[in-house]
Amino acid sequence: MSKNSSQRHEPSNIADSPPRIIGGSLRGRKLQYSGDLRTRPMKDRVREAVFNLLGPAVRGKHAIDLFAGTGALGLEAISRGASGATLVERHFPTAALIRASAAELGVENRCTILPANVLLWAKRLPLLPRAPWVVFCSPPYSFYVDQTEAVLGLLAALVEQAPGESLFCVEADERFDFGQLPQASEWDVRRYLPAFVGVWCKATG
Image 1 (tube, one colour):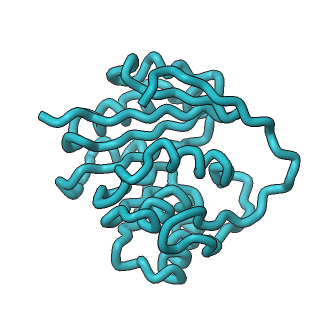
Image 2 (cartoon, one colour):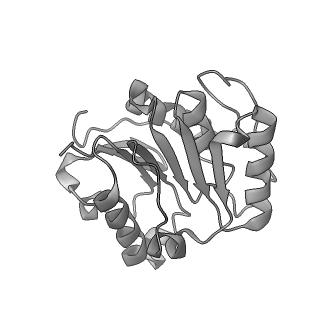
Image 3 (cartoon, helix red, strand yellow):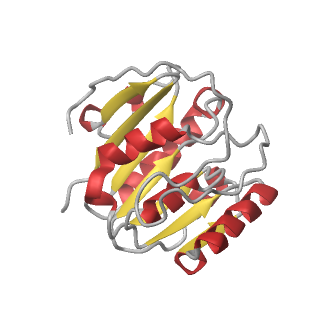
């Protein structure tokens, strides 16, 4: 992956529609979406770009979808060959919709859906599969301003515990300095305005 490269996409004026799986075995299947403003689904074009960056390396990994919202990232990862997913979403009604989507897609037995505050969950991080992970961190952008230390602590804890060959994907806006991330110089940061996305792979050993 190249370092600190950028790519510009013009923002769309088209109203958000219920997200759907973009690729893999479940391609085209729609996800449950309440339209609640507290849930900010990653735009389809950005999610497609993310999975183009990750490529086939998703296969066989365990997806960890933090601030899961609709669960689109974790469920997309399963569609593209991830072995399973842990999806953490603090808003109970939204977590219930993720569970409904997983059931409709027939992958509920491969998903662990946790209605929990991600920042508190990370402080008592449970045992997770020892197979490599693919970690998605896409919180409300305001978290990077209001709770910067907590978010950085969350990512640092996961980076430390992640098995080798784990992938990390962080979505933010221009207010976040990706230079604060662990191993900052190794992240591949792309621009998909208004989003910025950084991807990093933990080395083995």
